[in-house]
Picture (cartoon, rainbow, N blue to C red):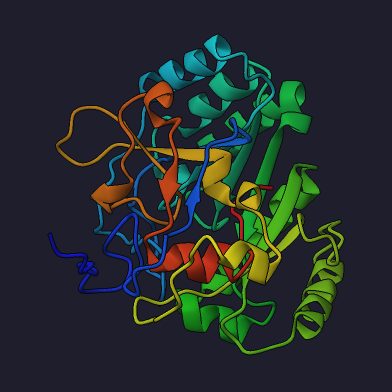
Length: 315
C-alpha cells in the first residue's frame, strides 16, 4: 500500500486539506448570534463590485415572504434562542413586497431587526415610509438600519454605485435620521485610505447630515474588508489561529446562518455565510437544526473577509 498523499489540485477545493496537504481550518457552531435572511438578489442598482452580484436583473435568489420567515422564528423559539439579532440583506431588502411585514414578524417576537439598505428609492416610497413609522411607534429600539455608503465623498461613492447614487442615498439617510430611527453606516476599504483617514471623512459627513453616529464606534460605522473574485489569499489551516492570534469562535459562521430561496427551488435553504449564497458546498439543509454543524473554511472569502480581514456582517 502506498503512503503517497493525493493533494487537491486547486486551492480551497478540498474541505479537509489545503493544496499543500495541511489540515484545513474549520469552525464549530456555537449557537445563534445573528440569523440572516437574504430577501432576494434583485436590486435597484448594480454596484461595480457587489459581493453577491446583486442587480436589477439578478433573481437567482427570489423574494422572501412572511411565510418563508416564520418557520425559522419558530425554530429559534424551540431552541430557546430569544432576543436574537435578525439581519436582512439582499439585493435591496425594501424591494421585497413583504419586507415591512417580515420586520414586524421579527420584532413582535422580541428579536432585533438589522436591515441593510442603500436608502434609495425603494426605502423612500410613501407606503414603506408610513409602514415603518407605524412600526417605530411600538418597536423603535428593536429596529436598526445600516445604510451602505461606500465612501464619504460623493465622487467615490458614485464610482462604485453609479451617478446620482450618493444624492439619492443622502435623502434616505436624512429621512431616517430626522425620523429618529436607529441608524448605522457601512463603508468599504477599497480606496487605499487608512482607517483614521476614512473615519475622519465619515465624521464630517455624519456631522453635516446630523446622523448622530459615533464614527469611532466600529459597530456603528463598519468599514468592510474589500474582496474581489480575482483575489488569491492564503488558505487557512488549524495552525493559523495561533499564528494570527485569532479564534475560530470569533468567525461569523460560528454563530450565524443565512436563509435563502433559490429561483425555482420552491423552498428555502440555510447557508453558512452571507457572502457565499451560491456555492452549494456551503448549503447546510433546509432547517436551522440541520444547519448546526461545523463549516470548513474552503472559500477565498473565508480568508479575505473573515479571518485575515477581521470582517463580520453582524452588529
